[in-house]
Amino acid sequence: MPDPAVSSYFGLPGWVVLWLLTIASFILFGRRVWRYVRLLKSVRGENRLDRLPRRLWMFAANVFGQRRMLREPVIGAAHLIIFWAFVFYAASFFWNLLRGLLPFLPVPYADEIEPVAGVLALFGVLGLAALAVAAVRRYFVRPEGLEQSRDAAVILGLITVVLVTQLVGLRTKEQAPELATVMWWLHMATVLGFLAYLPYSKHLHLLASPFAVLFGDLDATGVPPSSNGAARREEFTWRQLFGGLACAECGRCERACPAHLSGAPLSPKLLMHGMKELVRGGNGKSFLGEVVKPEEIWACTTCLSCTDRCPVFNEHIPVLVEMRRRLVSDGEVDTRLQAALMNLTRYGNSFGTSPRARAKWTQGLEFKIKDARKEPVEYLWFTGDYASYDPRLQPATQSTARVFHRAGLDFGILYESEQNSGNDARRAGEEGLFEMLRDKNLQALEKARFERIITTDPHTYQALKKEYGLNGKVVHCAELADQLLKTGRLSVRNGSEIAATYHDPCYLGRYNGVYDPPRRVLRSIGVNLAEMKRSRADSYCCGAGGGRIWMEDTPGIRERPAESRVREAASLPGVNTLVVSCPKDLVMFQDAVKTARLEDRIVVKELMELVEQASRPAREQPE
Image (cartoon, rainbow, N blue to C red; front, top):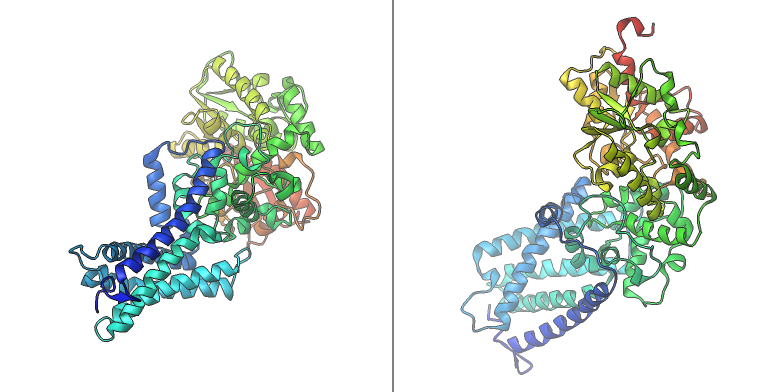
């Protein structure tokens, strides 16, 4: 095949034509990208360059390894092949481009090197097969939320042309050199056109998504940096806006969102699409109110399913929390939520009950629980509001105390000095209230003498561990029970005939990765454990998080998330018990069992209740 860069076309050498195409492509590409960079530099800052080694590992695993995509094996494998075909073809293109622009270089074109040509041919064939899988999924077996836009068809078409022209060129450069030359130019022009088109298209995510992964949230807190809230473009952080540019509109977040699936108006996919249009559009547009309505903002349960499923690590919850902060400051708050926030401010708990009544549940015990303010303890039990005040939960709280007592655990509580951890207040948009509660609790903890903190509430666990700065000192009761059983400090009677399924709480599972300890505990006490389809990281939210437990149900929803979840548990053959390890889950699911009329089908039990029953001496076991 003659060298395309030195052949003459319309009286011009090939390298001149290639220079003209390259300059035009790079100018169009650079102008648009620089506009986005300049815009992102002008809004609120946010440090996303900390802990660089961990970021690089996350980048390698989820960009080069496509780990999150592989949670859906078929399309994940297809996407992995397309990605690596893109990598090799991009490397080959820039090699050939440099050689074509500078034909005097004493190097061959990439596809003139036999091993490289072999790799390109292999990935070309595999890439076309993977594109066929992607096309069938998009146009024939399309999952809910996956866009069928013209832009998507253009991108699929362009990628196909890039692969086909390279393959045809490889096959014909000896037998049909003229055709191979045509394919070479078509390949180069398509890639340069593709490069110029990307920043202007909805598929900008092909460029933005690797950076979105690199700058992802390492701590999974679900809250943005402290602020007065946001309503307009300039009030969001650069990373929040960047999420819109990185969004592929694949719908994975939407298919996992309990608010969306229950029929609430919230769509995390459309939220990110709105962010994208906010970046691309004018500066005067109010995002809050004009694009996203308050009822959408309040529908979120902050369960983290959207972010956990997003292959580009977009952070939907911080965007919603920013707008909640603005709504709270403007007084646009649900009546019940407002009452709960007022109770937290006045009493330190959401029930509006005197702090002196916080430890009233201890009166039903056969032993005295130490006051950690007055004497040193090994474990400080941060009990939480619901476990302390809600009559429906107090039997489970007492069971937990009995387990600790039987294991010989040296533990105590803060009595009336304990305040709500502030987790839900913070996610409801009351950042100032969260800071007040945090500071009061830290002051109480400073006066107590302890080695570690136990909590039964995953929401409290998240706040203490990641937002109070106490990581390494905090343990959930499921983790502690697992340790007590492993070390033999707690003896149990194996032989339970309970057939149960376990629900992973959002703030214990997705936020903190605690999946195995509660399952080991259940198996240790002889529970026959079955798994729901949506378990572990795919667990379905009960609907209580983010302050939703304090709000009215969203009007017009099809079914509350808790009802959907108990139906899922009840549908498992032979299962008669739904086990939880979160006080809010216990409340939500017990109510849902009644409203779904499943009382004769399934019962909801707290994990520590079952442990307490299994740890009773033989003389105290029920007949």
